[in-house]
Length: 225
Image (cartoon, rainbow, N blue to C red):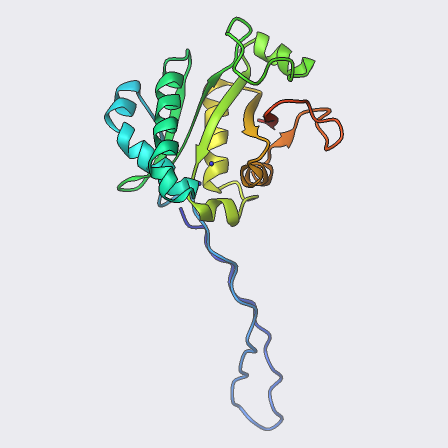
């Protein structure tokens, strides 16, 4: 699971003028300007893809997954193939949406589908959703985010900024579907993804603590709109 914000001006302090001189005071060196990050006003454009566009650019999406997963050579083989198989299956789900961020090429993506009361349970959620989320699912306001694939710098810098690309993608998915919350599954061994999601505003479900976490291979995380 990845635009330039104007940097704040460097603050300076003026030195007192020397008595009897008209030389202008020299500014003291100030702190370095804040780090520049992605901006929603320039750079990546976020837009949804139709199913036909997904089919046409499937290999490019697979390359994006391999490039952003950090899995080395394996990411370009088994992991990339497994990702594409999951994506092809998920595209068939009712209400599925895939958003891409792009400049001249795809630089990030996020995708998922609404979890409604009449839908078959998504693998891994059985028995793990509290009553509040089940009620949202029953009225079509719960969204499953299957994946957020972004460059490493989006995971590591400016995670709490609203213009962070991952935050933009997940927020757009919820807004497009009028969802009150999103849920996702993360492998218990995938600590880096859990940390990234938490930095983007996700949280554990109620009752999920190191001592009381539900059993199973996955952890369930929740994102409120």
